[in-house]
Each structure stands twice: as C-alpha cells, then as structure tokens.
Amino acid sequence: MKRTTAILCVCLFLLMVGVQATRTAEASPTDTGVTKALIQQILEAWSTMDTNKIAPFYSAAPENVFFDIDPMQYKGWSEWAKGSQHFFADLKSFKLRLAGEPTIHNHGNWAWATYLWHGDAVGKDGKTQTFDGRDTAIFQKVGDKWLTVHEHASLPIQTPAAANH
Image: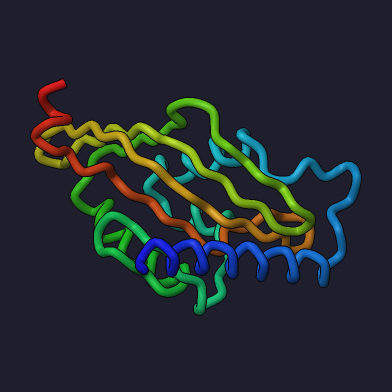
C-alpha cells in the first residue's frame, strides 16, 4: 500500500510539472537550462556562509518548502536563511563541492536535478567535520534566472553493516 501511494504521488507530481510547463512559455533556444556549472555556483555560494550570496539562487516565495538535514523542514527562503545563519555561527569555514556528475532534467521553464556532494567544515573550536550528502532540487525559470523552488538535502544513515565495508 505504501509503495502504491508513493508511486501515485510521484506520478501526480510529474503530471503537475508537465501541465505547468505547458502553461508557461518555453525556454529560449539559447537558454541551456540548469547546468552543472549552476549547481556548482550554488554550492560555492553556500561555501561563503553568507546567506545574502546564497539568496539569489532561491525563490523567495514563502510557500516553498525546503527539506534540510536539521531541522527537517523550512518553509520559505527567509526561514531557511535564518536557520542557516544559526548553523554558520558555529563555523570558521564550510565548503561544499559536487561529488560526481549531477543528473539534470530540463523541461521548458522547469528543471530538476539530483546530485551528490561533499562537505568539509571547521568549527570555531577547531574541530573538523567531513561529510557526504545527496540533494534533489527543483528549479523554475523566473525572468532570465533559474531559481530553486524546492530542495531536499540529506545525509545517508551509516548502518553498522555499511560502516564495516
């Protein structure tokens, strides 16, 4: 039952994206859509730990939902920015980079991407952290910019069996 519900939700989401894409003007032939370079720019903006440099890559619509590692959910960019400032307050440095090739699907004024990333952080106490994560992002073209309207970032759970390999 859960699997059927999950499949139905994914199908409905893809249908909604397709319907919305047909309602909006198609991207111009010179627009390449979301690219690996754009995703790397977003990660580089996060690496600055300055939400003013990160914000231009995100839609400011308050109804957008962003799933993060902690807390689990933010509603709207302004809420996410506040949470990020709190997270960055304990850090001396924070660096994110792509770990491999992203998978990107461009469709008119919409795009979605999945990718793996690697992070390194140094706390103000000097302690270092390294971590690998995954991300799914949905983009919408607004004017001449591609903005993130939804993002789901997560870290894989380390199970005892996985840790032994």
